[in-house]
Length: 304
Ligand code: IPD
Ligand code: CA
Image (cartoon, rainbow, N blue to C red):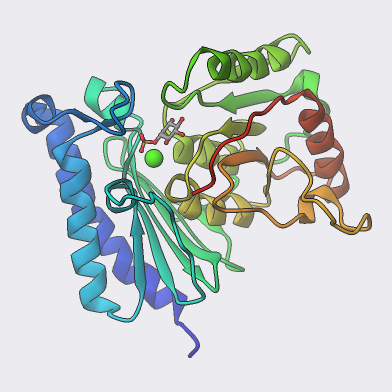
């Protein structure tokens, strides 16, 4: 059955706006947040609040009512299972992060967003990333372009993406996984700073970092430790803005004729490298992605 993605987007936008009211109210009043901060995986830096759970429940139940045959994957639901695995199938599947940027949310740093992505045959085809505090809604449908509050992305256009030493990078450090891993993540940021690139930024929400790259406000984003729900929605927005997404390493066995920008990307692989749209074209994107990859160190991490 052919899905009418435009109709789906307009219905789901309404739900996300309502979820956004809950997030914004809690962000401003602080009451529920302060009384409900918990840590996940007994890791003191991986936080969750009652609002994360409440918003996920709200989106799950409303989406189930409108699209009963679609499956649902959400950060809080997967985190509460024993396997903690995201098992994707060919059935249309919603992939939801109720609050991306939970640490920001807890601290009152206004980069928080609700992410709702739709996968069909394991491929992201629709994405909404909404920051209710700053009232910015990013949306995209595969093949139909990406938008912020209905303005087409990229917003910052026609800036050449010349070389790594003229680039602005984004990265995130995730939650604490031990000193060795911190050293690798910080080392990767240091590698960019000592190119020397123009700078390295972090918003504390990987989905909003990806949207920033889609917007044209930053040139690259990379992270190890990202989850499927962090990136599913934003991946449609980034690709539809003319950007590309790859892993840290070229997938094994891939034909040499496939350029880096066209490599298949593993949604559950926990490693991401993104580049923005650029007027120099895809070949240039591939060249620069190859150069960034040579600088990035990584470590083994269990996939989602
Ligand atoms: C996290 C944030 C953080 C990123 C992590 C994410 P959460 O999501 O986006 O910036 O470094 O990889 O898991 O826990 O705030 O939903
Ligand atoms: Ca997240």
